[in-house]
Every structure is written in structure tokens, then in C-alpha cells.
Amino acid sequence: MMLRRLTTWCVSSALLLAGCTAVLPGKIHPPVRVVRVKLVADSVLRRAEPRWRDTARDLLRAASDYYEERFGIRLAHQATEAWRMEGTTSSSVTLMRWLKRSYPRAGGDTPHDVVIGLTRQPLNFYKGGRARADRFGNCTQGLGNYIVSHVGESFDYDEGELTHDAVAIIHEMGHLLGAVHTDDPESVMHRDFELRIGFDAPNRAIVMANRLCPFARPHRTSRLSEYSRGQ
Ligand SMILES: [Zn+2]
Image (cartoon, rainbow, N blue to C red; front, side, top):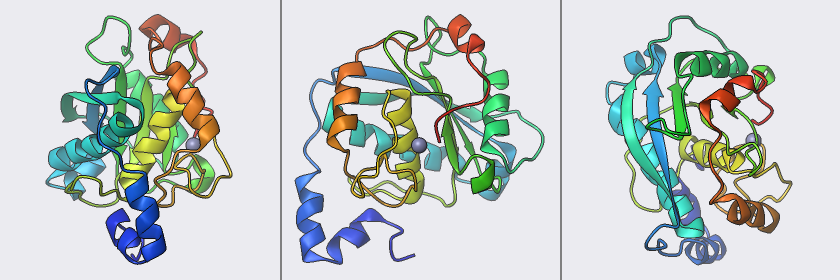
């Protein structure tokens, strides 16, 4: 649990502390882009975590602060609700398919651009990993609309403090905005979801170029492959 929370990790080393403070600038006001987000939690998470609504909201706040500080992108909460999905699976690919079936309308003129499905099902790395985006967004087809992410613990957000669960959502949001995996050990876009807070320069350029692009419209999303490419 040594790396469970970012602030603990930061203060463990004077060298790393300097790095942490250097990458936590203030928010960009006003935000350049506001992304409307619906949070849904499956029955496994709701049963395991009585405070699931607070945890979900705090995870989104953490991700929003991250993107607002670096890119001027605010992740605006639209709703938190129970995901009426029955069944169990260890595959995030299957969960993504179920999420898109449960919430077929996102983007365009709907009330939300992005739906984040939160779960505590025991997801298997070899069946898609602990988190997943529906696809890599771009300006031609639109930005991605769906994230599935495992929530392993309750979360009370203190500003600037991140956990593995928060980093996973930040990573997947990067995919919706077009970011791809990197081998940069400091970047949240590294594929292993360790506690990293940097955003590598090539992916930063992608997000800056895409941040004002439209989200995919519902009819377009439904035509996309049901098997997501991002993790
Ligand atoms: Zn990924």
C-alpha cells in the first residue's frame, strides 16, 4: 500500500516532492472545455461500498481537477445513478458492451457526453484489464463516450491527491481525448495504471489538439466496434 496515495508517494522523497509540486499548477479559468459526465455504479460496487455515490463523485472531482489544471478541461458531473445491470463477469470488454447497451445514448444532444461505468467486479488483466475506454477519440469520428473502471476502495478526495482508481479514470479519459499508450515512466498514459501523475509531451499535444472536438454522436457511437481498443 506504499504507493496507494500520491501524496504519500510524493513526500517519501525530497526529489519526487519537487517533481510533484512542479506538475500541479492551478486550474485554468475559465475552463476551455466542459465535458458532461454521467456516473453509474453496478450492483457489485453498490453492495460493497455504501458510500458509492460519494466515492464516484470524488473520483470524478479528482480527474476533473487533473484535466482542468493541465488542459483547461472540466469534467462536469451530470448525474450519479445505479447501473441496472445484472450478471457478473471478469472481463472489462464484456462490461463495456453492457454499458453501451444500458446507456446507448451519449454525446450529441443528449444530457451527457461521457458515461463512466464503475464496478467492483473482479476484472482480470487478461480479459481486458481493470479499466477500458470505448475507443481512441479523434476530431473526425468524435471523441470517445464510454469508460469502464474498477473501484477498489472508497475515496475521499483531497485536492491534488490521487489513487490508483483515480489514475485509471484519468488514463481512460485520456483515451477518449485521443491519447495513446506510452513507455514514458512518468506518464499516466503508461499502460500499467501505476501511480503516475505526468502527461507525456506527445500525448499532451494530442489532447490539446483534440480538446475542442465534438464528442461522437449517438448514432455514430452505435456503429463502432463493440470491442474496445483502449485499455
Ligand atoms: Zn490505456
